[in-house]
Length: 446
Ligand SMILES: Nc1ncnc2c1ncn2[C@@H]1O[C@H](COP(=O)(O)OP(=O)(O)OP(=O)(O)O)[C@@H](O)[C@H]1O
Image (cartoon, rainbow, N blue to C red):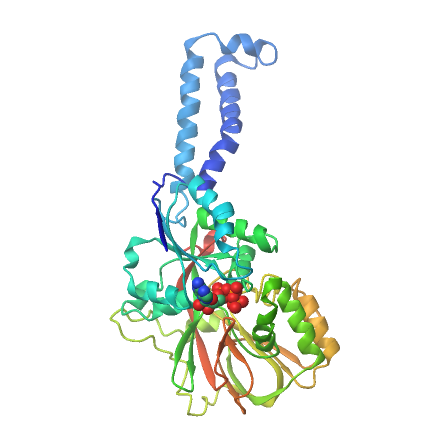
C-alpha cells in the first residue's frame, strides 16, 4: 500500500517555533533601543506619547522588522548542518512492529509534525519482511532526501543492508536515516534521543522527540560495522553483535511481544533463573577513536567494489598476533556501537554522539554471579553500571573483534536480529553512514 503526500517545504519546525517565540522579544529590544536613540531616556509614562510622534518612529519600526527578518534568515543560513530545505522523506513503516500500533502512532504523532514542518513525505507501509530491504536496494534514491524508519531496529537493519547491497553503496549509505521508534527494540532511536540532549524516555515521548529531531534535522556520521560470518555471509550492522545472555533474552522474549518493552525485563528475569554458559574464543583489537584514525583505510571506494575490511584476516585464519584472545566459558559477549542497547538500556554511557569510531566490547565469564548480573542490568537502566566494580565483567573499546563459539547451539544476534550461531568477526567503519540527530556544532558534517 503506497500513500503519496506532497507538501511544499518552506521552513523547519524549529525555525517556525523560533519565529513565534522570539518575535515579540526581539521587537521589544529593538523598540527600546530605538526610543533611546531618538528620544533620549524619556521612558515610562512619556513613552506612549513619544512613540506616536515623529516620522523617526515609523522608520524605526521598519528597521525593527528588517532586522527581525534578517535574523530569521540568518538563523537558518548560519547553521550548516541543517538538512537541506525542500526535504522529501521516505517513511518506511512496519505495521506489525511492537504492539502493532505504528500506523496510528504515525498518523497521530508524526504526520502532524511533518505537516507543521511543511516536509513532503512518501509513506510506504511494509507488507512483509525484507520489503524495505528490496525498496532501498532497488529504487532510485534520488527521489528522497531522508529515509525515516517507523519501526524497531529490525527494519533499520534491513535498510542499512539494502543500501549496502547496491552497486552504488558508497553513495547510497550516505542517505540520512531517521529512526521513528515504534518497535519493541528501539536502540538507535534511544541513542539519538540521548545524543540530541533529551532525557531518557520511552514510548510516545521517545517517538515525539525523534519526530522533532527529524524535523530539526542535522546530518551526523553513523558508524557501520562490517561483519563476516563463517558461512561467508557479509552483514552490515549499526548497533550490536550479541552472544549469550543478551541475545537469548532478545530472541526468547519474542513470545512476550504483546507486552511491548516490558518483554525484555521479563525475559531477563526468566533467563537469570536458568543461567546458561557458552564455551568459545573471543579475540579483539583494542583501540579507540584516535587509533581508529591511524588504523583507517581511508575513504571507501566509489567504483562499485566491495568495502574493504583492512583490519581483518579471513575467518578461517588465526587472528593477527597483536590481537588479544580470551578462551573461556562466557555468560555474555556484547559488541555495542551506540549508547543504548534498548530504550531503557543505557549500556554505553561513554558515547557522547554518533560516529565515535569504536566498538564497546563487554564480556562476562561463567564466574560472574547472578547477583552481579542483576546489579549490572539494574544499573544499566541509568547507565551507572560502570561505576560499580563488577567482578568477571570486562569492558574495553576495540576496533575489531572475532567470536568463535565452540558449539553452534546458542543464540547470536546482529542489531537484535537472530543469525546462525557460528564464528563471526567485524570491524568498525567510522562515519560510513549518516543519521539525523542533533549534536554540538563541532560534530556536524555536511
Ligand atoms: N508487514 C510486515 N509483516 C510482518 N513482518 C514485517 C512486516 N514488515 C516488516 N516486517 C519484519 O518485522 C521484523 C521486526 O521489525 P522491527 O525489529 O523493526 O520491529 P520490532 O517490533 O522491534 O521487532 P523485534 O522486537 O522482533 O525486533 C523485521 O525484521 C521486518 O523484516
